[in-house]
Image (cartoon, rainbow over all chains, first blue to last red; front, side, top):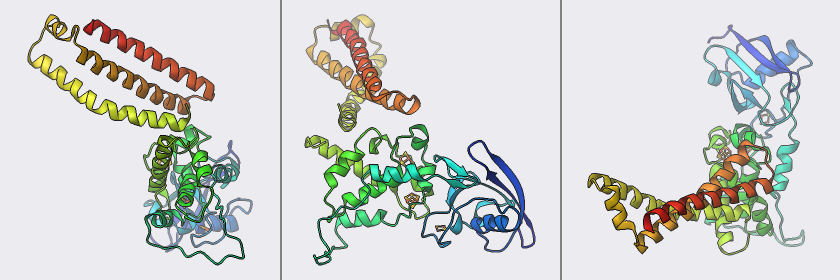
Length: 240
Length: 109
Ligand code: SF4
Ligand code: SF4
Ligand code: FES
């Protein structure tokens, strides 16, 4: 592939019953997949719906299925995903399509809530900021998963989510695990109960589709294994 | 049982099964290598409390482990309600235990 070549791009148009439309776009050096989608929207199809915000891999809004794999498109170079100048770009798997490349993320975020993926502290605004030692095992476990950008790439990569739509999924469980390791959090018993149900951590097959695709190189599989261990111990103690 | 308790039961039954399966396989190899006839095998197992206990534990652990595993597979493949899943799981556990214990009875009684 060289400068001046054309890219053959197929983009999903419409809702769940839509289909792919072919476009041609210029191939440019250091071009990202998001650049291609933006070029097509500005120059070929003004009605094309897609999401992005930061363009630097922070906001998590630009994830799409690119040549069969879920990816963050703002940080995915075209040269990384195609050798023959062909791109197939669709919406993320496992989420309802709103239109074109835009998915409805409601279920994804609802599951974060169902997994109690929100911090619950005891301090008030009048307390001093708590000093947290960075080198305890718990803090290290929390830090390992804390950089999640909510992009739902892992959620789209997970086959168990596809088979079992109730499954909380890797992102919500990863978030739950970071909070289980946060010594300031006060809802750990409730959270453990929330992730110990049929839709929770025990549904994970540990085959690491989430970990292989997470653009932030997080390891939700390890986080889920941590939750399984915690639930195991809680059951033996008679707490769950 | 709650899903969390089922998970624990499945892990613990796996831990019980692991050594039993190895001993069982060793036993098969030994019996075949030695060319023991069915009558010779039965003469050693009949009335033998050790083997009765060994294979009873084996059967119960396998029934627990298998039934919980089947529940997981069905829950992913078919949209069954939790009540149906649990009923089928207990049914499978009882069925597998009955079949297994029948076999144990046949060789030790
Ligand atoms: S490891 Fe678990 S959460 Fe990750 S993709 Fe596999 S089943 Fe889904
Ligand atoms: S765990 Fe990784 S892939 Fe999943 S939402 Fe967070 S950043 Fe995205
Ligand atoms: S646009 Fe923000 S992560 Fe891609």
